[in-house]
Amino acid sequence: MAEKNLEVETVQQAADIFGSFDKNIKILEAHYGVQVTHRGTRLKITGGEEAADRAQRAVSGLIAMTARGEAITEQAVRYVVSLVDDGEEDKLSHMGKDCVCITVKGKPIKAKTIGQKLYIDAMKNNVVTFGIGPAGTGKTYLAVASAVTALKNKDVSRIIITRPAVEAGEKLGFLPGDLQNKVDPYLRPLHDALYDMLGIETYQKYVERGVIEVAPLAYMRGRTLDDSYIVLDEAQNTTPEQMKMFLTRIGFDSKATVTGDITQIDLPEGKKSGLKEVMRILKGIKGIAFCMLSEKDVVRHPLVQEIVKAYGRDEARKGDRHPK
Image 1 (cartoon, rainbow, N blue to C red):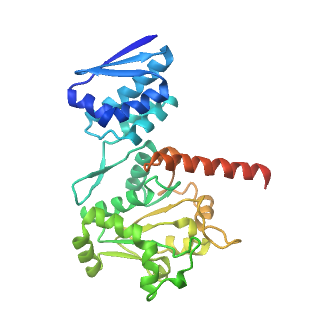
Image 2: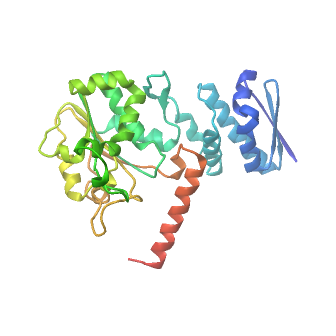
């Protein structure tokens, strides 16, 4: 039986790591089969030699996060544990340093995973960035945050956010109202993200002035978008022709972020995804970055991560049964 000791600066720091009713530390204890206790600012880990060593490295990562003022959530604990298991806990020092944007409620938006950190850096340093990964990895939210920051910093004069209006099993024609009413449900996640960062009143003011535009992809045809930050969401549901149309709208002093999940394509059978095609066509071009997010970057309920993994395994099995 091994014993590892760690010291934190304050009792509050220890309390933050343990979480309400010790829920954070219980995740770590269950994963490694160790016991973690604290008295004042001293933390003690008891268990098998290897398990205690890994638990110590995970707790050290959590201590570093609290020292940077980051909140310790169940998702954060699970992520740190996964990094330790992969021998990558040293990467934690790169996370949470840069704030992308501040929400209207004063909450800082920061990278919660290494994949998100690389994605944020890519958006800063490239003209066109592709954020590709499963649901819950923050692709759209971080893209919108990057666009809002660019607008506030006067790097661009307007934001244009768009997505293809493709049904995911439902039929658009059955929705009530005119065309705008019919496409609004597809744009709702984008509206919600903008409300979060700007507030409803400021957002509506910007829309009235034409500073922010949220519209279906079809509205982009024939336009040249200068001095703009453009976000194309749900890009897996574009055709190759639509993707080319979108990318050739980008004008001078503009940036674009394209997000999508190639495992959730809702196009009719036989139609190719423009996102899949563009990954092959534009690979290696300077100024264009492709960021591949994985289930490790999921920042929703931990069950979402397990669902993504399960579907990935199922797709792999199907691929084995039907080799191309």
